[in-house]
Length: 291
Length: 306
Image (cartoon, rainbow over all chains, first blue to last red; front, side, top):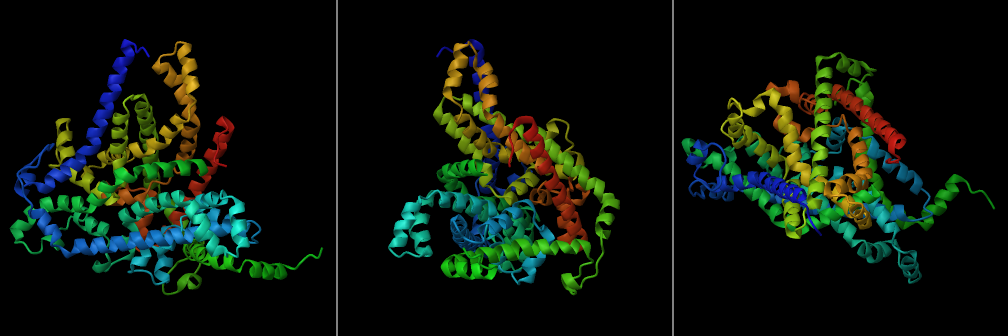
């Protein structure tokens, strides 16, 4: 194809703009990584952009890795992610299966009640009162159970279950399979791609979730990673991590510790995401087609 | 045929579908406890709720809390801030991913395309805490963004302490966070455009710009319209998560929105009933806006959500 002069210039322009976008997106991350390895004194004195670590210092990482808070946070976050995702997929699958059956007396009613929650909800304070009322506050379950089903996912999964050919279930039924066998042996394996996408979405949401933990959980031993991050980044308190150091040093090391903590808390997800992003792209498509 | 009574039908359904009832149990329990019980809890907006007396035992207050909100100095402030932030993001953040998708579409090199996409998706995977933490750090006096800003007339004091800067910072960081992720849906719509249309346009002598204008844009217009409707329906729905991580009393006059106000009044100052009333007001407006936007779009372009 022949490309005209003007068009070539506009093409170069586009390449350039996209290049700038890449830099702007990546820079904050690089800044954090460079700063985390830097000498704290130089970080405090430094102004403006940073294109390489200023000096080299692993003190911040030592502090972070010898700090029990980080392990507690990781442990709680892992619990929330693993249990939360499993429970969410299980309950959503059960509901989607029942709602995808024909000739079940309550299904139309249930669908109406469920869809309604997408348009109107009780709101923050009533939810807070309910979670407190059922005794979940100050437990990890407070970040899991109130979000055990996502209505949107339930409806998508139901549509996906409906598309499984009836003939497969019929033959299983003739062999004497009950509903649980049909769901877990036939329908779930056939809908695995959809389930995987939903699980991944939900896992990222759980990994990064902080708000409900911040209002429901007060016990430090139950803090997920993000809440420790909040203490360090938003409430600017590095006391829990620097408690071993002398007062003067605390301020200095505090300057690099927040960066090192960000790296430690964000590194796993940044390592994984390039490999799983295509599933997420698929998720956007599923949502777009059915939503 | 005999018309069975309701209880008779229920009994028969229960016998034949007993496993289904068992499977549905956790789902029903979830919706009852965590969706419908809070809806029932909305009643406290019309009461003077105190935890000791419970929802039923608390005395009725009628529309008192709604009135108190409408009469208060906060009403106009949070409403104005919410609308302004929403309209700004509609003007600046909404078109950004469309532009990005159009640009990515022009890139011929597959590897460069993938690089741009992978990099711009990244912020989606980073937690709000980290993003807010970075915004705070970078805009603080001595931070990167603050230093760059001082070359253009900034006075070097923390940017989040200056209420005039909150909205630009909020919108710009929104674009940074979302541009890549939100472009996915437009890219998908772009892929679906029939290649023959481009061919036909080319034969008619259309250059790339004209192809973009006459083929690409009409091709993704339905997607744009649908997402626009959703946005309109959420006009008064500025999320509080990022705002409460960024704001402080000094900039409440520009940064405090309805949802952050609900959070602060309800969960930090324990005005349960008042805060719920504000939340109910917000939900009702949102619902109205969504229905309205959908109706308009149906009239104008035949695209609608339902």
